[in-house]
Image (cartoon, rainbow, N blue to C red; front, side, top):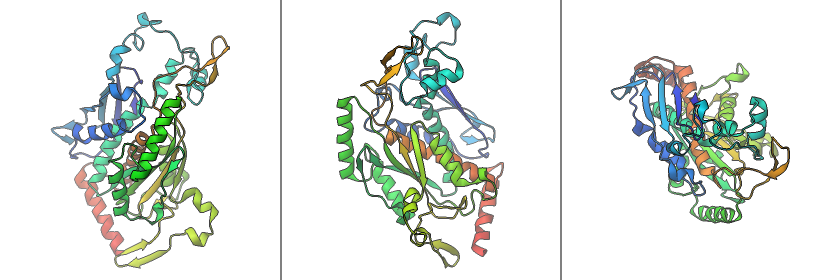
Length: 386
């Protein structure tokens, strides 16, 4: 759970269920926050904030104690909004209301739903600033998963019309990790240097035009055991949970797993992953299913691809209607990114980490790391004997 507004005093988050005796500190979280803030095309807010996660509960002397972990990220920009975002009624009216909804945002629908005539009451929470805390909580989940050799990464494959060819269904764990490592050196998180250059030029053109760009990114998970998720009920399917988690990220409008939509244009014989056996493991040489069959992880890398729409806040405003006067205006402009696809890929990692961590604890539950690891290792021995 997260709480907090974009220009409020702070963001807070709680993650419950992490077993005791997991080593954890802010040093495990802050590098992930820095990754989220990077990327060519980010807005002016990133120059103000330098996010740091303070752990205020659930950890003692460097290790989790089994109770809920609470994180706090202060908003440095709050000093400029202390009156406008004050909780005190005496400050009401200290800044003018926002009455011109922006197309593509939650502004109008949210104002109608919650009966607000100042859209700031909506845009402050619907803002993607909230994802800083998601990344922080996801970093805790990543730290837990690392104890089991599970690794999560991402990379950008398309921004606007510029894209790199990607056939993830044929890649090994090592090849996926190599792509991730290369992406970490790119200012748009694209593993291909030549495509990175073209993407950067396209973003520069969008900046000059006062426009914005979307794109595609992939998130992968390696080291996942067979058996996470279930086929027995619709809401227990791992692919369903992962898709929902990715779709919950602001501006994401499409998700596919494995070869996804491409499979629809092929014969079944071309896109089913044949099964082989080499003692003591079953294995596949392709991964069109993206590591999930029947809602259950099959031991192959989990591959997800997400489509992000262009940021709807434009320096060159679109037409809108004032919610008070009902007159036509240009939509209000709030400081925003031109392209946030690189950041969205990092947020995608966090959301996937939270789902996989939850699935691991559901499968191998325990109150301490010793207990969870004992259950996990026993299960791996069972798989070898299957």
